[in-house]
Amino acid sequence: MLTRSVSTRNALVVDDGPVERLAGKSMLEKLGFDVTPAASGEEALDRLAESNYDLILCDISMPGMGGLELLDATRTHQPPQLFIMSTTHNDADHVVASLRRGAYGYLTKPLSFESLRKTVNEALAKYADEQSLAIQAEQVARQDALTELINRDEFSRQLTNRISSASAAHDSGAMLLVKIPGLSHINQSYGRINGDKILQFAAATLKELVRQTDLLARFSGDVFAIYLDGVAHDLVEQRSAAITERLESVKTVLDGDAINLTVIIGGACVHPSMEVGDLLNRADFALHLARERSRNRIKIYSEADEIHKAELSAQLNTLALVHAALNDANRIVMYYQPIINLAEGNVSHYEALLRLTDEDGKLCNTGELVKTCEVFGLIGRLDQAVVKACFDDVQNLPDGVGVAINLSGKSIGDLHLLSFIESQITRMGIDPSRLIFELTETAAFFNLDEVRYFVSRIKNLGCRFALDDFGVGFSSFYYIKELEFDYLKLDGSFIANLPRNRNDQVFVRAMVEISRVFDLHVIAEWVEDIETAELLREYGVAYGQGYHFGKPAPLPKSA
Image 1 (cartoon, helix red, strand yellow):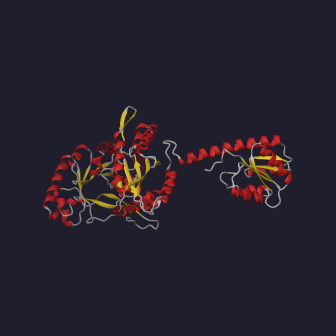
Image 2 (cartoon, helix red, strand yellow):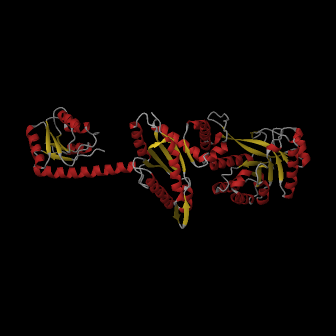
Image 3 (cartoon, rainbow, N blue to C red):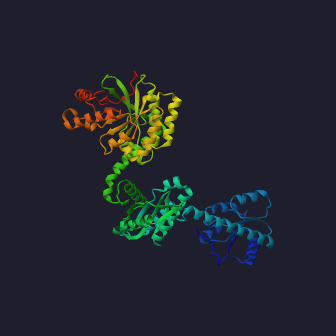
């Protein structure tokens, strides 16, 4: 923001009357102002286009452009003009009109020196206070209050100036996004005050690591932005590693616990004619790749990374579908595939399979729906929506026929989902023995304690549990020993070629024997033909699921 010079005080006196103009000029000169006269509003406007003035003493009623019109014409001037209005009319309408247009004072003619002196001093003091507040507000608007670093908007503004003024042939400079991924855990475990201390510590450490020519900002909640000015492109990853090593090497103490930070960095190098928006997008995409793929948690964008954008674009499209479905339950459609009692030939229960529709009601290709929702933190809400839809449908199934509902491993341990399931079973009066929750072996592997608690709570209601994809992991037998499952669902890879693969036959028969020891029922997936179904029945497998018995479909009309 421009500020007025403190070494000289310039005033402009605007009045069409020569006597009044001379009187105002003389009084202001006595107060120490260097005064320029103007005989009309038009002449004053020309003077204001050429110079800044510390004070403008202006008559309201003049031929042509009057004082109020001059006020309106200069309203957008920066810094604002300090107007004191004068007139021979001592009426409230003129006073209100002047002050509403931004005047700092009002005088009646003929002017008296004492009234002028008092009004000028008051106006100058008020103007100075307002400008001081404006400067402070502008500083606040550009600075993050917690870390005292510049904020995202100011970083982008300064970065734009840096890049636009750089040489067209430059091959140096880079932007880094530095993320502290454990901040949410610290906020939850130690409180937000301690979380703020971590951010302040990280900011102080980064200040020590950057040079005066670099830019450093708090970019978002747990992300800092750095512009490395003039750093050669082949040294950017080395500088990033030094930042990571420094931040991760220092312990901070919270409530008596020593905490080490974890850092993820995504960066992008500046290239000729690059727009700031492109640089930010590349750094942000690199941060995404660092979080998802990079072993050392540092990723500097390269043209080869473009191949991953198609995958990210597909994920974002899926994410948009999920957001729309969560806001419109009609776009969540449950398909059901029958699971057959092989000994009796009837439907034991159905497995519920999620489908999403577009705004026209057409089924969408959701790709890796669960993985995408897990990455972007929506899986808890999606699992709850699926549970609600299945609870609504189970009451329309024939008596004794149940439904198997898949839950993501990320949802196990979600106490909100747990409470929702318990409350909905009670509220809707559902027979809990008709509900089976399926957990994949992978989910159990990463969340064993949480799975044990979740299974115990829900089984106490009378629900049952199945361990899905059994046999593809390394800890299968450990899980059936440690967790209270009711069903084992053999992974389809052991079933698809069962009549022709002796190894698969041996495995399936062994699983049947083991299941009897643990009082578990075996379900075989991917049953595609009668030959496989007969073989499974012969081995003692209790249930079968696959296209041979029925494809996934909306709830049967007859159900």
